[in-house]
Image (cartoon, rainbow, N blue to C red; front, top):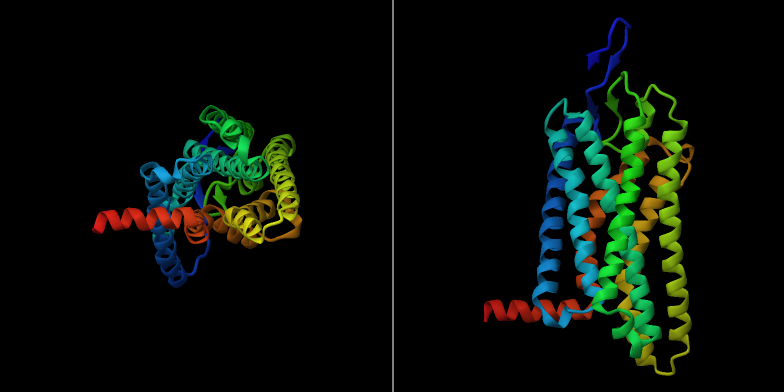
Length: 313
């Protein structure tokens, strides 16, 4: 921390992340668990991307968006996990002021990108089930790219609100952040400036994003359900449901956790509960997504068997 002028106060130049626990034994156990989760996350999501790119059977809009969801999972986990692993091994793990801003921005970008991508995938399922004859027209390559651009632009706008408001906050000590990464709410708590507006803007933007994407998902699935119930064939109903189960599982896990962290009033849960929920959405869910889609999706299982058969034949 640097002293400013003749006044007896300091400006924070770095932050100390307190991490998940002070217990040395538990830190070692968590290091091993989180490291294993991270390795599975990277390998699982990279495998998903490679499989979708190399298998011609998976060259469809749904899997195009799934490959970008896997990319967002890798980036979201990488924004948080390596620094958390270091934190388990050292007593003090300082992160620079600008490094903290970068970590905040990267988690906001890829966290928001996941929201947009999951909403887009819900709309894709809606078009595929409700208008199968027009699916190739309504979800053409050009349309898919436009959806992707909207997702990433929206994600960067969301992150911009966090980064700009972070730099509007003034930190004069203490610099101990009660979290395992530079999340916005714990940073506001250690700020010594008026944080009413800087705290409200990102909350409004993130809340609006969550509400908008959840509405898209809800409306899409309401129409999907209506369409499925109108089907006369039980086989058709089962096939339609089977294409949605993996996505519904991913949506429930991700939005349930994100809503707990960012949408619920902070007075309703403790800091430790916030940390656990943050670990779940930023570390655990990126590992689970490729597992969910590989276990609950017949196309991916079939493509994986074909590729493995071709490699080992």
